[in-house]
Image (cartoon, rainbow, N blue to C red; front, side):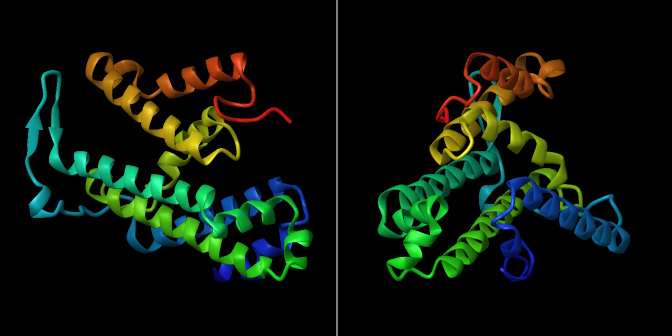
Length: 211
């Protein structure tokens, strides 16, 4: 919230590329500070004892914790989508991104709304980091390692489509997981192959709208 108020809010009237460059640069600085202080080897983060063990499926072994992560992520994603698409607060937010001047004329505090939305988005990212910690360990690069995959998910689902990102994220996660089981050599590239194919057929993404 502090970063949004002091820095990011000053770029809202400029091209989105400036915001991307600013936040990417800040991420590099913060990552460098943590690497200098704690190193890059990472620290283990124990799985809660209640979620230890796993289930033997016909084609793979599924750890209980990973199954819980899937369920928890799905609940949070659907709840977020419902708030944005089905509530008055979500309607204000969607309108504020399209025409903030008009929304503010109706008495809505648009700057505060954007600040809270930014803070909520960062909170979701932090929640994802906590869920991922027992799987990947805690290290300064844990966000950087996945940001390219997240970008691919957003592009495939369609820029601006929350539902598209949710459906695409879980579908690609399932595809990547199955690829690791049956053809591990392609697991790191299958998402980007799908992204290229989707963009060739539908440049706006699966759920995106053509301008």
